Image (cartoon, rainbow, N blue to C red; front, side):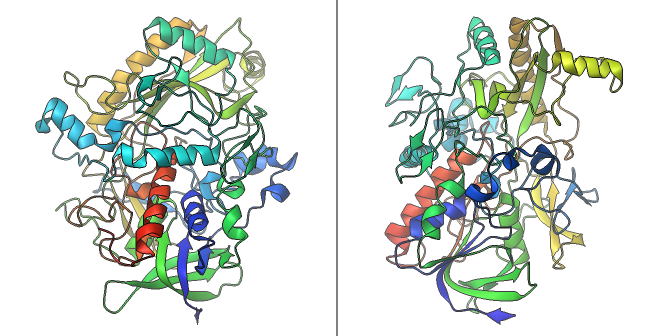
Length: 587
């Protein structure tokens, strides 16, 4: 093991959060090292036509995702079961390589609602404190919506988000989301073009009294230059967003935005293929001295000393590093003691495929976040007083494209192979569309992250173990939302419908759902009930910051990327204005 020269800052993980912290700290005279365990990703060399649209490489073989042969997780539904390793990427797809999951995301860019930021208070005030089940640890975010609003806007400007404001400075704007919290600025770009299936969805939703609006998309509807001078191309509606990088730079990613500035700073050093295995605690017990990492190409192990450490890896990897390093007390669901691994949340989802005999929908064209959304039953946008659940979600029609290897939907009852199946694929390929429910997931005492006692990664470390299952709240919420979805489907009048299916008795980690994993290192206002403070700073180790969705106390009905970006800007501002001037606890 080789000990390196001490630096001011080391950043673990170079995706959206790591890249944004690197951007904000570069050019300040600080010696900064960024450690990324995956490969270098150079958009102008790797993500160009025709190679970028290799469906076999990127979708089937998961080129941009984590290699499970080196490290995976183990999974079980309940704590009395034996967890088994996930051998193939399924329900979620953690990214690997420079840019992380920010390379292969779709670009759906929702802000949290105002109620999402003060969830426990809002629910308690509206329905009484007893309305919250004892095993549902709902929290207020330590930052109010107003504290983060300018950072939401800042991240939208950075990414060139296309959308339609619904609440501009307190004024409701027709055509936008009437339920959104007040925004200080409109979206930087107008919405993407509306697909024919979006039009059908909008008409049906309005006839039911709902308020459809264009999905906010980090897919540029027009050529764009952001506040830093980064240049974006216009979306080509090629249908290759999810799991792919973008050859026209129309989809925002860390590689074409936040990573550009630190990479040009002489005081910043990027080290790819550098896998951080653990953090080193100081002898006095209140500082992190640095990180150990292994060069995955040479096999050499290094110790990188640093004044300040930022954990900016993916949600589960952040928690895994804390547990393997003995930082904080591991959560115990039996006693309720410990905090690291607590409040793990996911997303509760369902979908339906609609088939139209007489309508050609051009399904092969699309964008990652091209869609229309109904928010009437999300968060606290509706009255829960007589309902048997808390939370909610949005209902949306998506036009994400239809790639030929992976997309061949057929109506129920169609044979699964043979001549009849081939004829059905040919007929219905361009006559179908997808509707989804994207639901919240609130914490349960029995859902958590821990270390597996049996299985290990390539370094001999215990794997991350996930214990997660749907709750009665999840099932009741989904039953309610599916009734509303079916009303929209009826109004759209398809020839055939596949789904939605009733939420299964147990969560299944095999089929893909979303990479929206949150919690495990939650933020709060007290070290008694949170791992980090409002600046994502460790209560126990003031020179350690743990950023990303691992800090979210619960998961909303929205995608987590925009709140994650806004929170990163907020943290960076606090570090620059307070911590760098006087290192120590910010709270």
